[in-house]
Length: 480
Image 1: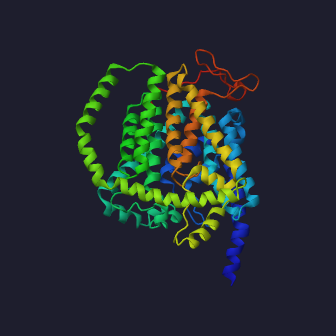
Image 2: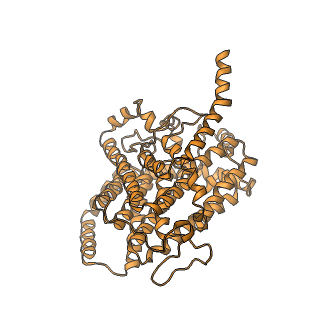
Image 3: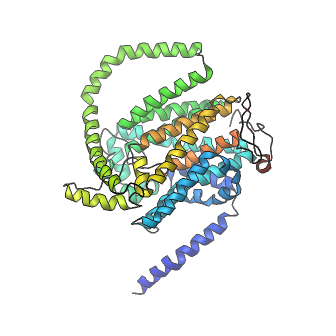
Protein backbone atom coordinates (compact mmCIF):
# COMPACT_ATOMS: atom_id res chain seq x y z
CA UNK A 1 0.00 0.00 0.00
CA UNK A 2 2.74 2.43 0.95
CA UNK A 3 4.40 1.81 -2.42
CA UNK A 4 1.25 3.03 -4.15
CA UNK A 5 1.29 6.24 -2.09
CA UNK A 6 4.99 6.69 -2.84
CA UNK A 7 4.43 6.31 -6.58
CA UNK A 8 1.55 8.78 -6.40
CA UNK A 9 3.73 11.29 -4.52
CA UNK A 10 6.47 10.95 -7.13
CA UNK A 11 4.00 11.60 -9.96
CA UNK A 12 2.14 14.46 -8.29
CA UNK A 13 5.08 16.22 -6.61
CA UNK A 14 8.35 14.82 -7.88
CA UNK A 15 7.75 15.05 -11.63
CA UNK A 16 6.45 18.68 -11.66
CA UNK A 17 9.23 19.76 -9.27
CA UNK A 18 11.89 18.11 -11.42
CA UNK A 19 10.42 19.75 -14.51
CA UNK A 20 10.49 23.21 -12.91
CA UNK A 21 14.08 22.75 -11.74
CA UNK A 22 15.12 21.57 -15.22
CA UNK A 23 13.48 24.59 -16.87
CA UNK A 24 15.19 27.00 -14.47
CA UNK A 25 18.56 25.31 -14.88
CA UNK A 26 18.30 25.25 -18.69
CA UNK A 27 17.93 29.03 -18.72
CA UNK A 28 21.61 29.41 -17.80
CA UNK A 29 22.93 26.95 -20.42
CA UNK A 30 24.11 28.64 -23.66
CA UNK A 31 22.40 27.57 -26.88
CA UNK A 32 25.59 26.15 -28.37
CA UNK A 33 25.65 23.34 -25.80
CA UNK A 34 22.10 22.29 -26.58
CA UNK A 35 22.91 22.37 -30.30
CA UNK A 36 26.01 20.25 -29.86
CA UNK A 37 24.07 17.72 -27.83
CA UNK A 38 21.36 17.75 -30.48
CA UNK A 39 23.88 17.07 -33.24
CA UNK A 40 24.72 13.76 -31.57
CA UNK A 41 21.22 12.89 -30.40
CA UNK A 42 19.07 13.75 -33.45
CA UNK A 43 19.86 10.37 -35.00
CA UNK A 44 20.66 8.23 -31.97
CA UNK A 45 17.84 9.80 -29.86
CA UNK A 46 18.81 8.17 -26.56
CA UNK A 47 15.47 7.21 -25.00
CA UNK A 48 15.16 7.49 -21.23
CA UNK A 49 12.60 6.32 -18.66
CA UNK A 50 8.83 6.12 -18.98
CA UNK A 51 7.14 9.41 -18.06
CA UNK A 52 3.33 9.39 -18.27
CA UNK A 53 3.35 6.81 -21.04
CA UNK A 54 6.10 8.36 -23.19
CA UNK A 55 9.86 7.87 -23.22
CA UNK A 56 11.48 11.30 -23.61
CA UNK A 57 14.70 11.10 -25.57
CA UNK A 58 17.92 13.04 -25.06
CA UNK A 59 17.20 14.67 -28.41
CA UNK A 60 13.80 15.92 -27.27
CA UNK A 61 15.15 17.12 -23.92
CA UNK A 62 17.99 18.99 -25.63
CA UNK A 63 15.53 20.67 -27.99
CA UNK A 64 13.25 21.70 -25.12
CA UNK A 65 16.29 22.84 -23.14
CA UNK A 66 16.92 25.48 -25.82
CA UNK A 67 13.58 27.16 -25.03
CA UNK A 68 15.23 30.43 -24.01
CA UNK A 69 16.32 31.09 -27.61
CA UNK A 70 12.69 31.09 -28.73
CA UNK A 71 12.14 34.06 -26.39
CA UNK A 72 15.36 35.99 -26.85
CA UNK A 73 15.57 35.75 -30.66
CA UNK A 74 12.24 37.46 -31.15
CA UNK A 75 13.18 39.00 -34.50
CA UNK A 76 12.72 35.62 -36.21
CA UNK A 77 8.96 36.03 -35.78
CA UNK A 78 9.01 38.77 -38.40
CA UNK A 79 9.43 36.02 -40.99
CA UNK A 80 6.07 34.83 -42.33
CA UNK A 81 6.68 31.09 -42.07
CA UNK A 82 7.66 31.41 -38.41
CA UNK A 83 4.33 33.12 -37.73
CA UNK A 84 2.50 30.29 -39.49
CA UNK A 85 4.45 27.78 -37.39
CA UNK A 86 3.41 29.59 -34.22
CA UNK A 87 -0.21 29.58 -35.41
CA UNK A 88 0.07 25.84 -36.00
CA UNK A 89 1.26 25.21 -32.44
CA UNK A 90 -1.30 27.54 -30.85
CA UNK A 91 -4.22 26.04 -32.76
CA UNK A 92 -3.17 22.57 -31.69
CA UNK A 93 -3.40 23.69 -28.08
CA UNK A 94 -6.76 25.39 -28.70
CA UNK A 95 -8.11 22.06 -29.96
CA UNK A 96 -7.83 20.74 -26.39
CA UNK A 97 -11.26 22.30 -25.86
CA UNK A 98 -12.99 19.59 -27.92
CA UNK A 99 -10.43 16.76 -27.80
CA UNK A 100 -11.32 13.39 -26.25
CA UNK A 101 -7.68 13.08 -25.15
CA UNK A 102 -6.34 16.49 -24.03
CA UNK A 103 -2.99 14.96 -23.04
CA UNK A 104 -2.49 13.91 -26.67
CA UNK A 105 -2.67 17.58 -27.69
CA UNK A 106 0.07 18.52 -25.23
CA UNK A 107 2.18 15.58 -26.38
CA UNK A 108 1.81 16.52 -30.06
CA UNK A 109 2.82 20.13 -29.35
CA UNK A 110 5.84 18.99 -27.32
CA UNK A 111 7.04 16.81 -30.19
CA UNK A 112 6.56 19.71 -32.63
CA UNK A 113 8.39 22.30 -30.48
CA UNK A 114 11.95 21.26 -31.51
CA UNK A 115 11.46 22.75 -34.95
CA UNK A 116 10.83 26.11 -33.26
CA UNK A 117 13.33 26.05 -30.39
CA UNK A 118 16.21 24.66 -32.44
CA UNK A 119 15.54 27.07 -35.30
CA UNK A 120 15.81 29.96 -32.86
CA UNK A 121 18.87 28.49 -31.13
CA UNK A 122 20.74 27.86 -34.38
CA UNK A 123 19.78 31.29 -35.71
CA UNK A 124 21.10 33.05 -32.62
CA UNK A 125 24.29 30.99 -32.44
CA UNK A 126 25.06 31.35 -36.16
CA UNK A 127 24.89 35.14 -35.81
CA UNK A 128 27.60 34.91 -33.11
CA UNK A 129 29.79 32.11 -34.50
CA UNK A 130 29.07 31.13 -38.08
CA UNK A 131 31.86 28.55 -38.23
CA UNK A 132 30.69 26.85 -35.05
CA UNK A 133 27.10 26.69 -36.28
CA UNK A 134 28.18 25.11 -39.56
CA UNK A 135 30.33 22.55 -37.75
CA UNK A 136 27.35 21.53 -35.62
CA UNK A 137 25.23 20.99 -38.73
CA UNK A 138 28.01 19.06 -40.46
CA UNK A 139 28.48 16.74 -37.49
CA UNK A 140 24.73 16.17 -37.20
CA UNK A 141 24.72 14.95 -40.81
CA UNK A 142 27.85 12.86 -40.34
CA UNK A 143 26.31 11.05 -37.39
CA UNK A 144 23.11 10.60 -39.42
CA UNK A 145 25.17 8.55 -41.90
CA UNK A 146 24.79 5.66 -39.45
CA UNK A 147 21.27 5.17 -40.82
CA UNK A 148 22.13 4.42 -44.49
CA UNK A 149 24.93 2.09 -43.37
CA UNK A 150 22.48 0.13 -41.22
CA UNK A 151 19.83 0.19 -43.94
CA UNK A 152 22.18 -1.40 -46.47
CA UNK A 153 23.45 -3.92 -43.90
CA UNK A 154 19.95 -4.91 -42.81
CA UNK A 155 18.69 -5.17 -46.38
CA UNK A 156 21.54 -7.49 -47.36
CA UNK A 157 21.41 -9.49 -44.12
CA UNK A 158 17.82 -9.59 -42.74
CA UNK A 159 18.84 -11.98 -39.95
CA UNK A 160 21.14 -9.32 -38.48
CA UNK A 161 18.26 -6.83 -38.60
CA UNK A 162 15.94 -9.21 -36.74
CA UNK A 163 18.53 -9.78 -34.01
CA UNK A 164 19.20 -6.05 -33.71
CA UNK A 165 15.58 -5.22 -32.93
CA UNK A 166 15.63 -7.83 -30.19
CA UNK A 167 18.61 -6.31 -28.37
CA UNK A 168 18.15 -4.30 -25.18
CA UNK A 169 20.35 -1.60 -26.73
CA UNK A 170 17.65 -1.07 -29.36
CA UNK A 171 15.41 0.37 -26.62
CA UNK A 172 17.93 3.21 -26.25
CA UNK A 173 17.92 3.97 -30.00
CA UNK A 174 14.26 3.30 -30.78
CA UNK A 175 11.30 4.34 -28.65
CA UNK A 176 9.93 1.34 -26.72
CA UNK A 177 6.42 2.50 -27.64
CA UNK A 178 7.30 2.39 -31.33
CA UNK A 179 9.30 -0.80 -31.08
CA UNK A 180 6.26 -2.50 -29.57
CA UNK A 181 4.39 -1.90 -32.86
CA UNK A 182 7.02 -3.72 -34.92
CA UNK A 183 4.56 -6.42 -35.93
CA UNK A 184 1.62 -4.04 -36.34
CA UNK A 185 0.83 -4.41 -40.05
CA UNK A 186 -1.69 -1.55 -40.07
CA UNK A 187 1.15 0.88 -39.41
CA UNK A 188 3.41 -0.57 -42.10
CA UNK A 189 6.05 -1.38 -39.49
CA UNK A 190 7.21 -4.58 -41.15
CA UNK A 191 10.88 -3.76 -41.75
CA UNK A 192 11.89 -7.25 -40.69
CA UNK A 193 10.54 -8.45 -44.04
CA UNK A 194 13.27 -9.41 -46.49
CA UNK A 195 12.37 -6.63 -48.94
CA UNK A 196 12.35 -3.84 -46.29
CA UNK A 197 15.00 -2.17 -44.19
CA UNK A 198 14.85 0.82 -41.89
CA UNK A 199 18.06 0.97 -39.88
CA UNK A 200 17.05 2.84 -36.72
CA UNK A 201 13.47 3.09 -38.01
CA UNK A 202 10.93 0.27 -37.92
CA UNK A 203 9.04 1.88 -40.81
CA UNK A 204 10.85 1.73 -44.14
CA UNK A 205 8.93 4.70 -45.51
CA UNK A 206 9.96 6.92 -42.61
CA UNK A 207 13.55 5.76 -43.02
CA UNK A 208 13.44 6.79 -46.69
CA UNK A 209 12.16 10.26 -45.71
CA UNK A 210 15.02 10.64 -43.24
CA UNK A 211 17.59 9.64 -45.82
CA UNK A 212 16.10 11.92 -48.46
CA UNK A 213 16.00 14.95 -46.18
CA UNK A 214 19.58 14.35 -45.04
CA UNK A 215 20.67 13.92 -48.67
CA UNK A 216 19.45 17.37 -49.69
CA UNK A 217 20.59 19.07 -46.49
CA UNK A 218 24.06 17.62 -47.11
CA UNK A 219 23.90 18.62 -50.77
CA UNK A 220 22.99 22.23 -49.99
CA UNK A 221 25.59 22.54 -47.23
CA UNK A 222 28.25 20.97 -49.47
CA UNK A 223 27.62 23.55 -52.19
CA UNK A 224 27.68 26.35 -49.64
CA UNK A 225 30.95 25.32 -47.98
CA UNK A 226 32.66 23.43 -50.85
CA UNK A 227 33.02 20.54 -48.43
CA UNK A 228 33.91 17.43 -50.47
CA UNK A 229 32.96 14.92 -47.76
CA UNK A 230 29.43 16.34 -47.62
CA UNK A 231 28.99 15.72 -51.34
CA UNK A 232 29.90 12.09 -50.79
CA UNK A 233 27.60 11.98 -47.79
CA UNK A 234 24.69 13.32 -49.86
CA UNK A 235 25.22 10.53 -52.41
CA UNK A 236 25.31 7.88 -49.64
CA UNK A 237 22.03 9.14 -48.19
CA UNK A 238 20.37 9.23 -51.61
CA UNK A 239 21.49 5.73 -52.61
CA UNK A 240 20.38 4.42 -49.22
CA UNK A 241 16.78 5.33 -50.06
CA UNK A 242 16.68 2.52 -52.65
CA UNK A 243 17.74 -0.04 -50.05
CA UNK A 244 14.83 0.75 -47.72
CA UNK A 245 12.34 -0.96 -50.02
CA UNK A 246 10.00 2.04 -49.74
CA UNK A 247 7.94 2.59 -52.89
CA UNK A 248 7.16 6.17 -51.90
CA UNK A 249 10.84 6.77 -51.16
CA UNK A 250 11.90 5.62 -54.63
CA UNK A 251 9.29 7.86 -56.25
CA UNK A 252 10.39 10.82 -54.12
CA UNK A 253 14.07 10.18 -54.90
CA UNK A 254 13.40 10.38 -58.64
CA UNK A 255 10.83 13.18 -58.52
CA UNK A 256 12.48 15.57 -56.05
CA UNK A 257 15.93 15.06 -57.57
CA UNK A 258 14.56 15.84 -61.04
CA UNK A 259 12.90 18.99 -59.74
CA UNK A 260 16.14 20.01 -58.03
CA UNK A 261 18.09 19.66 -61.29
CA UNK A 262 15.44 21.63 -63.16
CA UNK A 263 15.49 24.32 -60.48
CA UNK A 264 19.24 24.60 -60.71
CA UNK A 265 19.07 24.88 -64.50
CA UNK A 266 16.49 27.67 -64.25
CA UNK A 267 18.70 29.49 -61.76
CA UNK A 268 21.93 29.41 -63.78
CA UNK A 269 20.19 29.18 -67.19
CA UNK A 270 23.02 27.15 -68.62
CA UNK A 271 24.43 23.63 -68.51
CA UNK A 272 28.17 23.18 -68.18
CA UNK A 273 30.19 20.81 -70.35
CA UNK A 274 30.59 18.31 -67.53
CA UNK A 275 26.85 18.28 -66.82
CA UNK A 276 26.05 17.87 -70.52
CA UNK A 277 28.44 14.90 -70.80
CA UNK A 278 26.94 13.43 -67.64
CA UNK A 279 23.39 13.73 -68.99
CA UNK A 280 24.43 12.02 -72.22
CA UNK A 281 26.15 9.15 -70.38
CA UNK A 282 23.19 8.66 -68.04
CA UNK A 283 20.77 8.74 -70.96
CA UNK A 284 22.79 6.14 -72.84
CA UNK A 285 23.04 3.91 -69.75
CA UNK A 286 19.30 4.17 -69.12
CA UNK A 287 18.55 3.21 -72.73
CA UNK A 288 20.76 0.13 -72.45
CA UNK A 289 19.55 -1.17 -69.08
CA UNK A 290 15.86 -0.21 -69.41
CA UNK A 291 14.77 -3.62 -70.84
CA UNK A 292 16.43 -5.38 -67.91
CA UNK A 293 14.88 -2.94 -65.42
CA UNK A 294 11.38 -3.50 -66.83
CA UNK A 295 11.81 -7.26 -66.54
CA UNK A 296 12.96 -6.94 -62.93
CA UNK A 297 10.09 -4.55 -62.21
CA UNK A 298 7.49 -7.04 -63.44
CA UNK A 299 9.02 -9.79 -61.31
CA UNK A 300 9.45 -7.65 -58.19
CA UNK A 301 5.79 -7.45 -57.15
CA UNK A 302 6.06 -3.64 -56.96
CA UNK A 303 2.69 -3.16 -58.68
CA UNK A 304 0.91 -5.71 -56.52
CA UNK A 305 2.34 -4.17 -53.36
CA UNK A 306 1.29 -0.71 -54.50
CA UNK A 307 -2.27 -1.92 -55.12
CA UNK A 308 -2.37 -3.52 -51.67
CA UNK A 309 -1.27 -0.23 -50.09
CA UNK A 310 -3.86 1.65 -52.12
CA UNK A 311 -6.63 -0.65 -50.89
CA UNK A 312 -5.74 0.03 -47.25
CA UNK A 313 -5.67 3.77 -47.98
CA UNK A 314 -9.14 3.58 -49.56
CA UNK A 315 -10.49 2.29 -46.23
CA UNK A 316 -9.00 5.34 -44.51
CA UNK A 317 -10.34 7.73 -47.18
CA UNK A 318 -13.85 6.29 -46.94
CA UNK A 319 -13.86 6.80 -43.18
CA UNK A 320 -12.39 10.30 -43.56
CA UNK A 321 -15.13 11.34 -46.02
CA UNK A 322 -17.79 10.32 -43.53
CA UNK A 323 -16.14 12.17 -40.65
CA UNK A 324 -15.54 15.33 -42.67
CA UNK A 325 -19.24 15.49 -43.53
CA UNK A 326 -20.15 15.13 -39.86
CA UNK A 327 -17.41 17.39 -38.36
CA UNK A 328 -16.28 19.75 -41.14
CA UNK A 329 -15.06 22.71 -39.05
CA UNK A 330 -13.62 21.44 -35.75
CA UNK A 331 -12.52 17.98 -36.80
CA UNK A 332 -12.42 15.17 -34.27
CA UNK A 333 -9.95 16.61 -31.74
CA UNK A 334 -6.78 14.95 -30.50
CA UNK A 335 -7.49 11.26 -30.01
CA UNK A 336 -10.84 11.55 -31.79
CA UNK A 337 -9.73 9.71 -34.94
CA UNK A 338 -8.72 6.63 -32.95
CA UNK A 339 -11.99 6.56 -31.00
CA UNK A 340 -14.24 6.97 -34.03
CA UNK A 341 -12.25 4.59 -36.21
CA UNK A 342 -12.51 1.87 -33.55
CA UNK A 343 -16.30 1.81 -34.03
CA UNK A 344 -15.95 2.02 -37.81
CA UNK A 345 -13.41 -0.81 -37.79
CA UNK A 346 -15.64 -3.04 -35.67
CA UNK A 347 -18.71 -2.35 -37.82
CA UNK A 348 -16.85 -3.21 -41.03
CA UNK A 349 -14.98 -6.26 -39.83
CA UNK A 350 -11.47 -4.78 -39.60
CA UNK A 351 -9.08 -5.81 -36.88
CA UNK A 352 -6.96 -2.68 -36.51
CA UNK A 353 -7.35 1.05 -36.04
CA UNK A 354 -5.64 2.64 -39.04
CA UNK A 355 -3.99 6.04 -38.57
CA UNK A 356 -4.82 8.82 -41.06
CA UNK A 357 -1.58 8.48 -43.10
CA UNK A 358 -1.82 12.00 -44.50
CA UNK A 359 -0.43 15.24 -43.04
CA UNK A 360 -3.45 17.38 -43.88
CA UNK A 361 -5.88 14.69 -42.75
CA UNK A 362 -4.00 14.48 -39.45
CA UNK A 363 -4.23 18.25 -39.03
CA UNK A 364 -7.95 18.25 -39.78
CA UNK A 365 -8.58 15.37 -37.36
CA UNK A 366 -6.66 17.14 -34.58
CA UNK A 367 -7.97 20.68 -34.94
CA UNK A 368 -10.26 21.08 -37.91
CA UNK A 369 -10.10 23.27 -40.98
CA UNK A 370 -8.26 26.18 -39.31
CA UNK A 371 -5.37 23.92 -38.35
CA UNK A 372 -5.21 22.70 -41.95
CA UNK A 373 -5.04 26.30 -43.19
CA UNK A 374 -2.20 27.01 -40.77
CA UNK A 375 -0.35 23.96 -42.08
CA UNK A 376 -0.83 25.04 -45.69
CA UNK A 377 0.32 28.56 -44.81
CA UNK A 378 3.49 27.22 -43.19
CA UNK A 379 4.35 25.00 -46.18
CA UNK A 380 3.67 27.63 -48.84
CA UNK A 381 5.40 30.49 -46.99
CA UNK A 382 8.54 28.45 -46.27
CA UNK A 383 8.71 27.15 -49.85
CA UNK A 384 8.22 30.67 -51.23
CA UNK A 385 10.86 32.07 -48.88
CA UNK A 386 13.43 29.45 -49.91
CA UNK A 387 12.59 29.70 -53.61
CA UNK A 388 12.91 33.48 -53.54
CA UNK A 389 16.52 33.16 -52.41
CA UNK A 390 17.52 30.86 -55.26
CA UNK A 391 18.67 34.04 -57.02
CA UNK A 392 20.52 35.55 -54.07
CA UNK A 393 23.74 37.32 -55.04
CA UNK A 394 25.73 35.21 -52.57
CA UNK A 395 25.92 31.65 -54.04
CA UNK A 396 26.42 30.22 -50.55
CA UNK A 397 23.15 31.66 -49.32
CA UNK A 398 21.44 30.42 -52.48
CA UNK A 399 22.85 26.92 -51.90
CA UNK A 400 21.58 26.77 -48.31
CA UNK A 401 18.12 27.92 -49.39
CA UNK A 402 18.07 25.41 -52.23
CA UNK A 403 19.07 22.49 -50.03
CA UNK A 404 16.48 23.41 -47.39
CA UNK A 405 13.74 23.76 -49.99
CA UNK A 406 14.21 20.33 -51.53
CA UNK A 407 14.72 18.65 -48.14
CA UNK A 408 11.47 20.17 -46.92
CA UNK A 409 9.75 19.29 -50.21
CA UNK A 410 10.71 15.63 -49.75
CA UNK A 411 9.45 15.73 -46.18
CA UNK A 412 6.09 17.21 -47.18
CA UNK A 413 5.72 15.00 -50.26
CA UNK A 414 5.98 11.75 -48.32
CA UNK A 415 3.93 13.13 -45.45
CA UNK A 416 0.91 12.83 -47.76
CA UNK A 417 1.08 9.06 -47.37
CA UNK A 418 2.71 8.66 -43.96
CA UNK A 419 1.62 9.11 -40.37
CA UNK A 420 4.20 11.55 -38.98
CA UNK A 421 2.11 14.61 -39.79
CA UNK A 422 3.64 17.99 -40.57
CA UNK A 423 5.92 18.43 -37.55
CA UNK A 424 5.77 15.13 -35.70
CA UNK A 425 8.74 13.06 -36.89
CA UNK A 426 11.09 13.48 -33.94
CA UNK A 427 14.22 12.46 -35.86
CA UNK A 428 13.64 15.04 -38.58
CA UNK A 429 12.16 18.04 -36.76
CA UNK A 430 15.53 18.72 -35.02
CA UNK A 431 17.48 18.55 -38.28
CA UNK A 432 14.96 20.67 -40.17
CA UNK A 433 14.79 23.17 -37.31
CA UNK A 434 18.57 23.59 -37.21
CA UNK A 435 18.76 23.86 -41.01
CA UNK A 436 16.02 26.52 -40.99
CA UNK A 437 17.83 28.51 -38.31
CA UNK A 438 21.17 28.29 -40.11
CA UNK A 439 19.68 29.41 -43.41
CA UNK A 440 17.72 32.20 -41.73
CA UNK A 441 20.89 33.52 -40.09
CA UNK A 442 22.59 34.00 -43.45
CA UNK A 443 19.53 35.24 -45.32
CA UNK A 444 18.47 37.65 -42.58
CA UNK A 445 15.11 38.80 -41.26
CA UNK A 446 13.03 41.82 -42.23
CA UNK A 447 13.95 45.06 -40.51
CA UNK A 448 11.54 46.23 -37.84
CA UNK A 449 11.50 49.78 -39.13
CA UNK A 450 11.52 49.32 -42.91
CA UNK A 451 9.68 47.06 -45.34
CA UNK A 452 11.31 43.82 -46.35
CA UNK A 453 12.91 44.49 -49.73
CA UNK A 454 15.64 43.02 -51.87
CA UNK A 455 17.90 45.02 -54.12
CA UNK A 456 18.84 43.82 -57.58
CA UNK A 457 22.09 42.49 -56.15
CA UNK A 458 20.13 40.30 -53.74
CA UNK A 459 21.19 42.05 -50.55
CA UNK A 460 18.83 41.48 -47.66
CA UNK A 461 17.92 44.06 -45.05
CA UNK A 462 18.89 42.68 -41.66
CA UNK A 463 17.77 43.76 -38.25
CA UNK A 464 20.91 45.37 -36.90
CA UNK A 465 19.36 45.98 -33.53
CA UNK A 466 19.19 42.31 -32.56
CA UNK A 467 22.01 40.94 -34.69
CA UNK A 468 24.60 43.64 -34.20
CA UNK A 469 26.04 43.32 -37.74
CA UNK A 470 25.60 44.97 -41.08
CA UNK A 471 23.74 43.20 -43.90
CA UNK A 472 25.58 40.44 -45.78
CA UNK A 473 28.69 40.58 -43.59
CA UNK A 474 28.28 37.00 -42.38
CA UNK A 475 29.83 34.39 -44.63
CA UNK A 476 30.02 30.63 -44.45
CA UNK A 477 33.50 29.24 -44.00
CA UNK A 478 34.92 27.40 -47.00
CA UNK A 479 35.98 24.43 -44.89
CA UNK A 480 34.81 23.16 -41.52
